[in-house]
Image 1: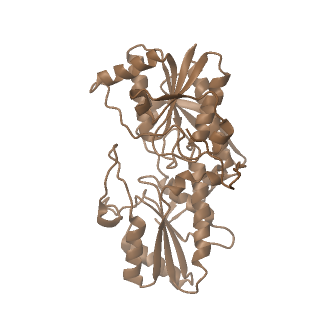
Image 2: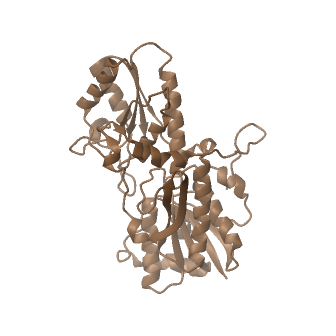
Length: 400
């Protein structure tokens, strides 16, 4: 019998722990698996020998706990040839702990870790099965229809934008409310704001994604056109990564700090546009940055998202036990209505370091999205999770 090791990496989501619960549930069913370990703080837990046993935790409470129960990291492993001793250390540790299966729950950069580790194992004929479990609210992983965590974040974004729109209409005066939503290069989450529209509410009136260039001049004209139509309380959804035709970020100064992967740590697009509206139009303007609330709103879990996150974690264990390695688990959509998907796996080389963006043909006039995106989104936010509450009236969470 071999032990299974699971870890979480990258930005947390409201559903990442549902995937962890699925992995634990799947591992408990397998007679070939002895102990179930979790590495604390991702691959850092392997390097620092910080593991916890997971076989006895409450999976139902874990599923509704937001963020990452095991802790996360943003450590990028070097290329295999640049630091072979590091990989020797990792796999010596796997041997010491009798690890036969390693599952890594994460996004784009986490799949890079899965790719490098599985390549090393294959190159050195090491029998450790390594599988990637997708996760990201950005929904930008290639070779999967969507990613766990995105549906719940989309549900939160749409709900919050709808509430902001209602709030914006209480005063009879011209105003512009700009909602800044996460998304560096992929606008899936910002596009989800379209779900806030219903038969009587047309907000958000404008939606700007980073897949197309943004013009400040056209933005002002777009708002003026809405004012001319009698829409006086304008609500705008913008991605944090919107940029002009030269690639310069709209966020103030056009520059920002970077994280350990070299990705821009973006903030300020909403505030920059708020100031622009005040200067050019002289009306009331405010900006709202949803920030981390998009990814930790466990009280607004999508039932579809939570259930699928659990299932793909469980399927990852089955995939590893069946002898596969160097794969990322994927969703393949069969139909929108009725919604139906199946879980498969894809070669990790196809998804690691590859971003999936919103098709530009789904974007209308640079300031809206079409029915294709709406049809894609609707099933992913469907259903509500019955949340368990403690005696103080707050949701129960599991703490390590």
